Length: 340
Image 1 (cartoon, helix red, strand yellow):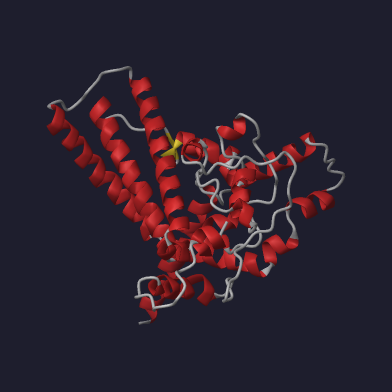
Image 2: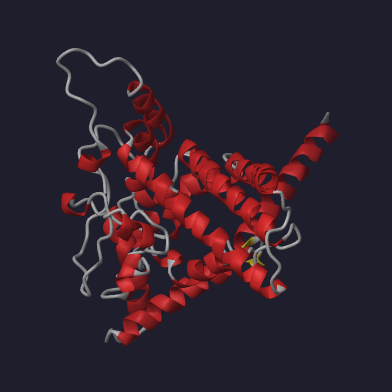
C-alpha cells in the first residue's frame, strides 16, 4: 500500500511538472516565458515611443505590474481558475482535437461525393499550405466571433461567460478566468470550424497539406498572439485607430469590450481581425488616449471572486433561465444591458 501511495505521488508530481513545463515553454501558451517576455517588451516599447520615459526599474514595475493586478481579490480568482483550468478542466481541448479529426474527414468525403473528385486543384505545395493556413485562421476567427456574440446575447450562455467579465483588473491570467462550461463550448465551436476548414482544404489540395504551425498551433494565430492578443488582457492602452482600427482589433479594442460602461456594451467580439465586427455592426474603434476604463460586471448579487461565484452560481443562474417564467415577472436580463 505504501508503494502504491509512493507511485501515485510520483506519477502526480511527474504529471504536474510536465504540465508546468508545457505551459511555460510551449510557444503558443499565453503563460510561456517567450510570450510573457514579448508582451513585456512590446508594452515597454509602446510607452517609450509615446513619451513615457522609464527612469528606473521601480517606476517601470509600478507602471506595468500594479500590485493589485497580481494580488487583489480579482487577481486571486484569476490565479485559481488558471490552475483549475489547466489541472482539472482540460477536456475541451480533447473535444477540439476529436472534432478536427472526425469532421475534417467527413467534410472532405462529402465534398468528394458531391463533386466526384477527391482533389479539386493542384498548386505549388507552399501555396497550398499558405492558403490552408489562412483558411484555418479565418475559420477560427469566425467561430470566435459567433461564440462570443452568442454568449453575450443568449442569457443561458451569458451566465457562464460572465465569469470572464467579472475580472476587475486585467492581466494575462484573465485569459484563463473562464468557467469550464464556457471553455468547453468555445473549444467545441472552434473545433467544429477548424474541422470544417480542414475538410475543405484537404479536398481542395490533398490530404497531405497541413497548415503552417508553431507548437501545433496555426502560424498566423500564434504570430498575432505575440503581437496583439497577449496584450488584450492587460491595462496597457495600445489602440489601433483610423483604417488600421477597422482591420485589426488592438488591445484597446478588447479593453473596450471589457468595459463596465454601458456605452461600450456589445462591441468588439472578434479576436484579431475586425472583419466580422465591421460586417455585423459591432465594431467600436478606440480613441488614441485612454478613457481610463473600469472593468467588471454591474449589478451583481453575489461575490464574483469566490469559488462559489466562479463555478457554482453560474450553473444555478443558467439553469434558472430554463424554468418557466412566472406571470408578471420581468424577462431575464439581456446580456446587452448588464455586460461589457
